[in-house]
Length: 276
Image (cartoon, rainbow, N blue to C red; front, top):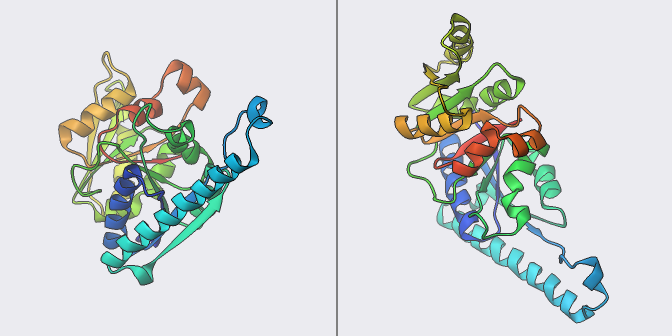
């Protein structure tokens, strides 16, 4: 089983180039078709100010979006030409709502790849894109950290396991990447009870049935939250890809109370594949 179609959000920025590096590497490893996608954003003008802004200013903002998308297409096609993938790639573009457009294109793909925004340096819709896309797309989403990759994606995969629908979805969605990995670690967080040990064995048996050997490890839950435990384990083991279910609780609850999804998205130093 391999990935056949990979979508990468590509708007020509340094963030997008980091995402494209990861997407291109995976496309080569999986022999997948690669689709770049950019979206023309509607000018964001406050209602109270709309009447005071001349039409030519609004037109200039629209034309600027046209130019940015055209430049992104040129850069993407140049990368594909250099990689010898012109016949195994394409570029899609849309206008308006970014999440809706990426979902529409992404639902015909096996994986969506995008780059993490640097905190407080990009528009809110870019910073919030990973959260929104994971919840809406119905497809696994791979987020590449803004610090970049330290190693090729998927050599050592860390699966974060809990007995939840979201974790089961992530396990199945990432199977092509587990098959390609040289090392797989399953991380469970619990109370050191036999029940927890059995839960950790479930995904190990599933992966073994698909020819993947995995080590089961239990994270200590003493004094730290699950998200921090995941980040610590990834750092300690040198994992270059984290796989996890996203938003087992509501996003509002995680925003207010804290949660593993929010913690990992904020503190990630390796690419993270999330499913919901």
